[in-house]
Image 1: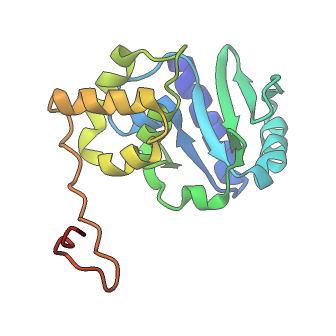
Image 2: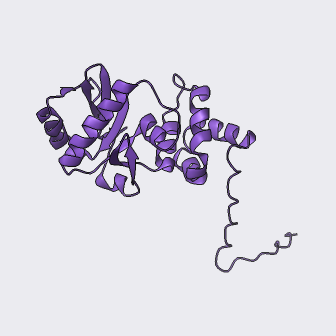
Length: 201
């Protein structure tokens, strides 16, 4: 974990000095907001239009850049620690607007933009799928940051993911998060009568 923290700081400083929009994301983003510390890798997000420039900035620091088979990120290695630089989610390129709600947070004595807890949880739940659906890992994270999250927004963002929706139901059943806000009834169409029509004989 100390190696991951050091890698996080080195890459963040390189991005800050390069003056490109970015944000800490993933499990380390949630850790920066009070969640449990992960032990796998660090995630940063950048706009796709800035990805080539970001790669150059990091390479100029003498850090090892690796292109995996996936075409939506590249990896940076600091000794044995791995940092993912993500510039596309699915088929959608990340844009600079993605960082509009990022907050400046001091992480290991380095001030850096961190995605909102709402965006981070939406991303985390959106990644749940049949072969990666371990609720015991996600539950303590959700408990730790629950008061920072707009859970209704997360529900909307993950509405097409049945695994995310099942996890949200679990959170509500455990009273970790409040029930969804009631929806306002749809207004009747113009000229429509609220009383039932008499049956035709």
